[in-house]
Image (cartoon, rainbow over the protein chains, first blue to last red):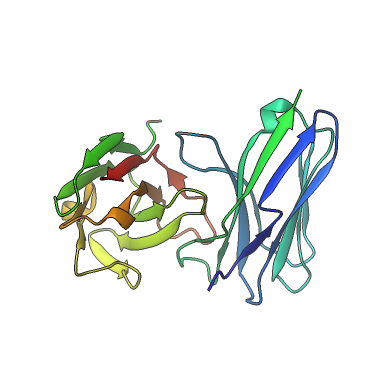
Length: 111
Length: 115
């Protein structure tokens, strides 16, 4: 059973387009994190969201945590080839429990 | 600040052989995790240590996998005997102690191929 469902699984878009990636669960999380992973590397943290309804922005990336703390979204504006990678959402049931990861969304931005 | 170090980067073994992976976490980080990432999937937790004690090993296949963290610093993960389905990237991560919802810092991983 996959506790965190990510969609879409694959996404290929042209440079300059906007996109949204979704992370959904039937479970409530105390926090949710988004990581980006490039080939041959470990995941690197992009953002942590802890409050229901919270919105965080990181340059062209906008992250939102659902009001019920069961889902999250990542929106990228004007995607660039450098945004290419595997985007992983990961949740914690409580503050110090291990991260549970989704399967990821593999994004390819074509110049 | 040095990141999480893992070795080797790559390993190819035949099924039924044994293999060991090594991880050196970020200095001062009390929490250490081993994750298994099969191609096309997200990382799956194998074991979590807090200092040198095991916090969660519920998903570790204990008939063939073992892990230890002597002295609460470095850690080794062993597979004996390996199966074809163990082919994956094994990621080590560490976090500071006592900070809820903190970031997990990952190493580059060890890519294991079992043939």
